[in-house]
Amino acid sequence: MSTDVNKAIHELLFEQTAVIVPGLGGFTSTPGTATVDYVQDVITPPSSKLEFNPNLVINDGILVQYLQKNNLSTYQAAEEIVEKFVASVRETLERREIFEIPKVGRLYQDYEHKIRFMPEGTNFNADSFGLPTLDFQPLAKEKPKPMPIPQRPATAVVEGGLATAQVAAADTNIKVGETQTASLLMKTLPWLVLLAAILIAVSLYIIFGGTNQKTVADLPEAVERLNVKPTLPETENAEAATTPSEDNPTPPPVAKQKNTPPKAAAVPEAADTEQDSFEPNKSKVYLVVHSFGVKSNATKFAQTLTEDGYAAQTKKVGNLFRVGVVVAYDTKNDLEKTRRELAAKYKAGPKTEKELEEMGQ
Image 1 (cartoon, rainbow, N blue to C red):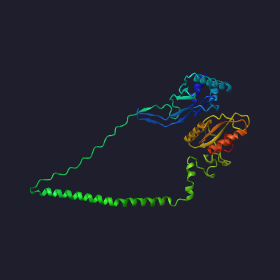
Image 2: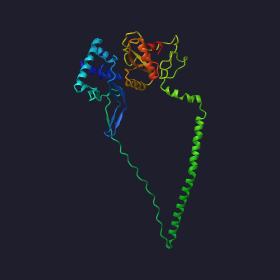
Image 3: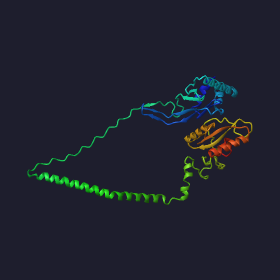
Image 4: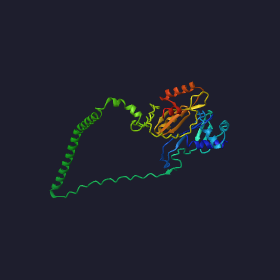
């Protein structure tokens, strides 16, 4: 059954930013840009950087549900398959042997008994999957040819040395003129620099002198809201609502008009596998920490949550990318404690998906 788990990890990495193997650790992928190797003259397409985090041991249910769906088995049977796989991996690592996951990488244990990971090199970036590396040859830059130096015409020899004296006098006049020009330029250069500085100062005063102080004070808030979708007036679009941001992740809903057709339901990127309620003795719930309008920002924040030890998960709802964590709890007090911890740590107001739906978001 280890083959099924290996295959499941490989296939899930194309869809998820993090695949957690309960009791072993989690594989996380970070999108990267294209690279250029000037030594080997090779251009590599954009790919995801694959890493292994042994601290991600909480079961988020993604791997188990994938095995349950593909093997047409029960949830308990899929959990037993994962447990046997983890036991096999740990036995192999305890024997100081390398455990290989095909098309993903190799796991081994160092002298400090820490699990290390060597990626295979598979490109898990779905946008650039299948793109080959390109060979290139740099173009040689031709040096510009030097300009020819004009030659002074030869002076005719005249008896008595009259022509030679005239040429010498002409050369002297040219040198004196060049010296005077250079001296004049050196005298006027400081005044030109001063005049340029005055013009720059006047221009800056004209541009920024009349700026409203309130507008300047609001600049930091405006900068933080660059990625927020603008709010439309209620008279133009009754369904428009304020887009959540890091400062206001859960704004109040806007009342809809009676004759407005219902808004189409957003399709999330990942299946919702958590119990989204406050009933006691439930296993877990998905808390949305922040919502973003740009996918790259959501990916960076999900990476931050993963590095802090949380089971991060990204979901796309409409035009927004929700980033949250899967929280296990027994009572409502435990859930509220985790909610306050996330709110203080990331300056947010974590909400469950059920709460967001009730608020019309």
